[in-house]
Length: 220
Image (cartoon, rainbow, N blue to C red; front, side):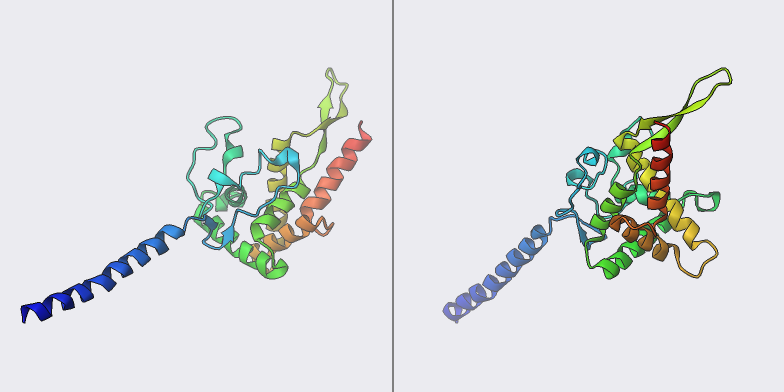
């Protein structure tokens, strides 16, 4: 009887070991970081070479959620290393009643990305990056002079300020479009980003950018 039982035990143990190995391989293979578990950062292309250092969406800046709880305001220029989708979420927390409601902002961004994917059938992170590149003014005008004599002088805008201003204009456009309107903020933000990515003048941000550049051109 003992001779018959031993091989049966061996046969039972073998498949268990194989199953454990397979499970381990499956877990170890999931290394790619995807935003909300859906949108990949690998194929994102920043088409403006001057903004590559200021639009953080590659390598270490790829995150599962746009909520890193980083201390980006402690030092000048540190917010350039904040993931770009998180910066968009932070820009939505404006106008007093929305201050500090980051989970709400993250949820809005999540819905926005879903809508963008349905509208364009593209990676929505790429659409956001293109919208920011197209929406930042390249030239602005500043006040020069003193003692009552003030005139405007055209100046070039730094890449860092271009990104900051683009985010501000996109968020402002979406907020104004959704105010006292049946459309949700996510729908308005998605529409704003898609229009800005295409360079369409239906976008609030593109219109403002063109206006700023036109005024500065007249003050050269």
